[in-house]
Image 1 (cartoon, helix red, strand yellow):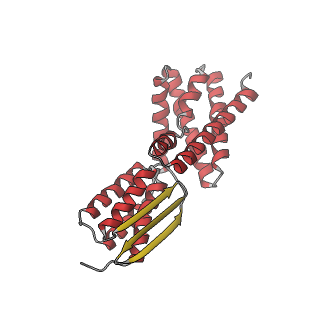
Image 2 (cartoon, rainbow, N blue to C red):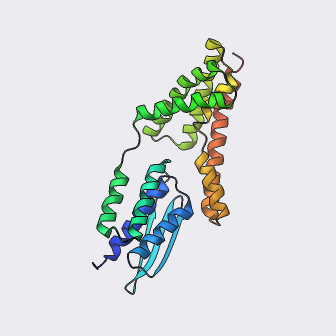
Amino acid sequence: MTKINHDTLARTITRAGIILIESGAETMRVEDTMNRLALAYGATVTDAYATPTLLMISFTINGQLVHNIKRVHIKATNLEKIDKVNTLSRRACNGELSLDQLNDALEKIAQEKPYTSLMRLFGAAICSFGFAFFFGGGINEALNCIWIGIVTQLVVEVFDHYHVSAIFRYMLSGAILTACALVSELAFHADRDLVIISVIMLLVPGLAITNAIKDSVNGDLVSGISRGTEAILIAISIAIGSGFCLFLLGGV
């Protein structure tokens, strides 16, 4: 068996954890994957610790204690990357990948580009259109949701490009989509409340809420509380932006 470089192993395991955290994976999945990878390459004692902003791995291999700590940030939800890392982890545990092969594969996954802006705009339009019917709207509301969903997604992407704080990003996005809904009411006689709730679903932090509950149930209270707080702040930001716009323009 090829001798494993301890530092390379620690960095590779941490890289897998970073991809999972940045893609929105829950804490238990991240820690379990990191522990399994360490054991797969010869470690005898492993301890992984993950929060939404910090990763730590500690393991013993060939009598040597190895540590690695990394500061991370949750970037976006990317279930495809999570699935690919899980697949690599299973292959590594089955002895199908050398450490170098695993490292190269993880680097390739990390460098993968997200969906194009055009694809995200198309997805926003389709989702908004569908939510209009889900909430009991008609074809008029659904059609208006298409263009407002596109505008909302464009606003989010522009704010992301200029690294606008998440709180202000969601607040301004909520205000803009509400203003568009008021326009649709005046110009096309659409139900503004239904249009607002349908398009606002694009901004709702559904995965963050789900992971917060799951982390808390699993006993990962630090991650659960931090994710839950993040989700609550995002929801409050959206509500403030939308509510302020309605307060200013609702009577127009």
